[in-house]
Structure formats: structure tokens, C-alpha cells
Image (tube, rainbow over all chains, first blue to last red; front, side):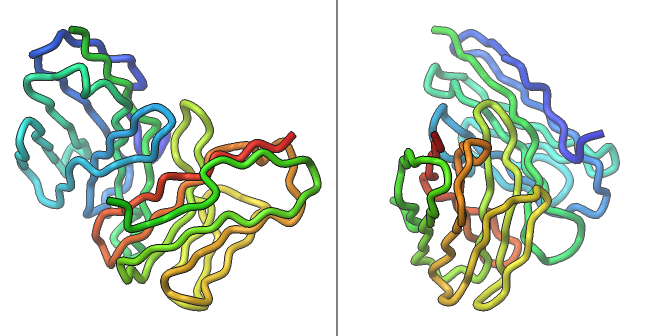
Length: 113
Length: 111
């Protein structure tokens, strides 16, 4: 079992729809969770960070964390073609203060006009 | 705006050459990292540093080496490049438990 698992997709949604991206992780000691967006050929850029159970909203993006079930999700409302990219889930490695992140393989999102 | 800089952006080099990939950050972050990413694959940590004169190998074994003589500078060196080293190399930095900030990456091709 991978430490951070994501469905590789592609996930295809029509423009204006809600895109739902999911991620599960295996380390119960993880405390910090991040979503990065990566366009083809580019480096990852941070979209959201979440540290406690529940929802966190930022514009069209909502991150959801459930530590008991060990999953974190990202909702994108009113999806736009410019949202088409690979979304990487990243989880800090255990409860240590190393700052090291373990990345999932990413989910490719396609938003069709 | 980029606060973490990687050079070169692209590098094509022959087998057996020594190469150094540069990474510098101006944010004063104590922690720096090198990740390797093949096309369509996940990022794998190959080196990290907690501060000056502190370096550790990451989860993915790599023949490269790193140094951290100054806080802002974290170069990666390959003594003898091979085609198997062809990949994208991403440098990142962070402060404590804050998110990683990535540079633009170096796409290395070894012929």
C-alpha cells in the first residue's frame, strides 16, 4: 500500500461543475496536509493547506480532512478550463518536525468547455 | 513571483559528464529539499537539509550528492551523468511545518 494514494484519473467534468478529488494516507501520525496543482511541464504550486478536521474554504476551493478515516479531499466549485491540471495530495511524514512531504501520484483533472 | 530559483531550466548533456544543478532561495527558509519526478509520476524525495552543514538522503536512492554551505544555497551534483538520470529535478524550501515552495525545476536529459 502506498503511503499517499490518489486515483490517477483522468477525472473529466464539464465547465461550471464541481470537481471532487480524493486522497487517502496511511500514516496516522501525519498532521499537515496540502493540495498542490501542477500544470504539464511546470512545478507544483500550493493551493490549500489543512491541519485540523473539517472543511477549509478558499474561494472556489474547499479542502476537507477526516483524520479518523485518513482521507483528505479537494472540491473545486464552478470548474473552469484553466483548472485542468494534475492535483497532488501531499502529507507530512509522521508527527516529526522534518517538514518532509510524501506526495501522491496525482489526479489529472480535465474541465471541458 | 519566484523566491526560489533553479538553474539551468533545461540541460542536455552527454554520458559521463559532471553536472551541478543550482538552487537558491531568498526567503531565509531553514529547510530545503530536492525531489525527482519522472513524467506522469509522483515526486520522490532524494535529498533534504535542515540547515547549514546538515544534509540527509531521502526516500528514493540517488547517486547524486548535495551540500549546504550557505542557508540560501542547496546545489545538487552528479559526478558522472548516465541516461538513467534523465528526469525533472525540483528544489523546494520551507520553514518549520509550513508548506513547501518549489522552484521552476531543472529538466535534465542525459544522452
